[in-house]
Length: 101
Image (tube, helix red, strand yellow):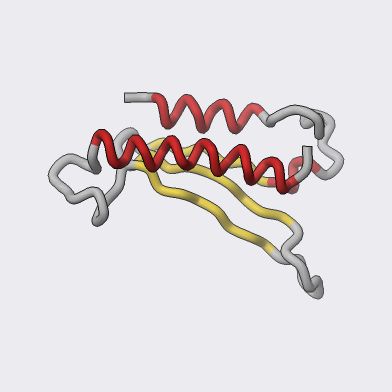
């Protein structure tokens, strides 16, 4: 699975999180636009001397339960636990986080 496909899977999870933000509101007592429940974490890191962004970090933070789920694409480079043909387990953790009440 390539980084581009990973980003597409993350975008699907994030769309569900945004939908939950709109449906169930935000943190108790705040407006949805001012303080949503789910926050997106998406950073790009560049190694020194490189022109392109090589690795990205994808994640979701739940401001009600104070939990987060992250996936860093550097794990795909030579890590035996990750198969490039399957979705990493961190994405299932993100789905569980969004589905929690």
